Image (cartoon, rainbow, N blue to C red):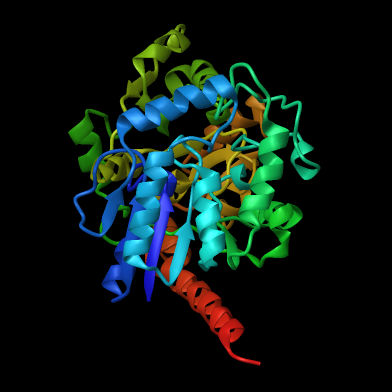
Length: 415
């Protein structure tokens, strides 16, 4: 079977690491696997192709923000992608995150629908069925066609114009065209949202995200990691990871306020910090900001030495960072937004009402206590190996691929 995945990035960030895990496992299992992506560092893999250029992405981002149309530019890059699809001739096109200033939606889906290419589409957020945003929060305009967007200046931002109603209608036409599809999401929450959208005409199923629990994300020696990075055995360490922390959706303010209130009860390490946000740290002396890193071994060491991982996102699907932390033996405290509660069952973590600062801090204090009742170490890691391994995830995707191919073969049979 020949599978081609399409995503914004490759092996950089949550969804992109999922793409890489699927690709690598498929090739290990003897399948023909390819990836095409638009942004980020060039991959050293002959089966992985970056079809966009940095200037094209920047131009698209600028024009999208000025015009309010996201997914209507990048014509040259999309032509290169289409040529690559023609060259690979995949049995299955596996779509992931398509927004991110790297694709032309009308061009790509006119091609997909004309060719009737079988598509598995994994939703990592809500963008495919709303006018423009990645998460709609408490807005329900996406159910009837968007327009008058209350989050027009959120990512993907529009500085001047609101084309969300137009994009919703065009996306519905393009995305539900003639190509056969199966919609996949990592959480029951998002599967339910997809079923309630115009994608409800397709099968919508849940496949939990999987990560590399054998070679990368597994419990490291806690004491050795703390010694390596300069922390004591008795230090109470709270860990957070995000991209820049500039997006309000990631809830940096809740972590920072919690750090102020915890004081000398704990040290708070924030990986992915950008110096431009240093003003947010005023009044704290227990926050240790660290830049982002693509070094997964380093991330695994930080996960392993922390006492608790925090995920204060105000909207979230099924966070890969939570899985990575738990696979390294560290429980999670987060808000009950989206699919987060589904991740933290079986004493793997604690969820509290979204935006409730007091409850968030109390959950942190509970998780830091030795008698918290939360799973830790190898006991916690074993649950993630059972439920969220790459092999389990890819096995379930293979069933979906085969089902879609079988349905296509049935349609081609005469009479």
